[in-house]
Length: 284
Image 1 (tube, rainbow, N blue to C red):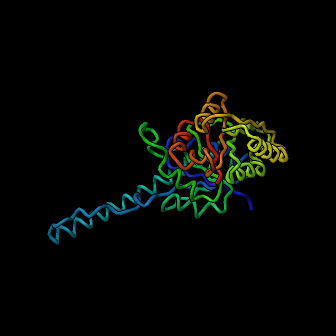
Image 2 (image 1 turned 30 degrees about the vertical axis):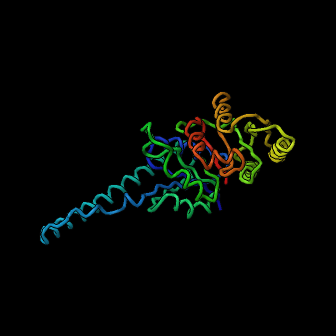
Image 3 (image 1 turned 30 degrees about the horizontal axis):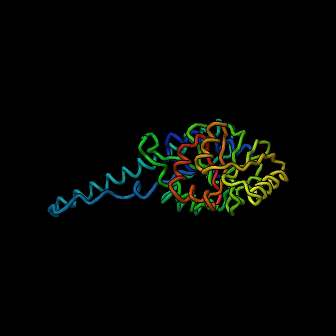
């Protein structure tokens, strides 16, 4: 049975790059792609009852008309969803991957992730949803919920696709960071890539030993990695390194401890992912 990755597309400006990243991952790992568009409850729900205290005959006619309009709307929403999937499938196949299967689902996207991803090796989403064009909008509302719901690593796609050659790994020695490095060591996705491991904080013997152990684990998998302890605050330092040195992917544990934990649980997480130009791979 071929391994799969799940790519969630919503028709936003991030969908195209997400499909290109999905194709890049699929080609490096030999996986198939399950392409999913989710019709949320609000898209499938009936309109409000506007009939109020209208007389019975008129109210019945109005309700019948509303029911007809709701049926037409549901058909249009489903048609749009299938069109989004068709476009995404075309992008992936033009990128050289034929093993792609589109799926139209109903429900909450976070719940869909939790139900679907056990059969996959990775979940892909865009940083922001359909309101991404509006500068005052925050990250996609579903981002944290999806990361919490997913049993698999979550790849958060950047707005523009760029082949990944250089990988920055945030290491804090916590369980999720250990799982992130273990995932890298086991996955063919990272073979031949340049990897830099960094711990942000005090350069204590314990921190250095933990970092060297992580580098050794990658080295045992034939992934060459440099390792460095850098003083400062995690969000600021990682953001500066990513911007100044042009890394193509940031890998981090989704729920770390110490100061890295505040990046994922608190508001600094949203700021980090929002300002980071590269995609982010989150591993719980």
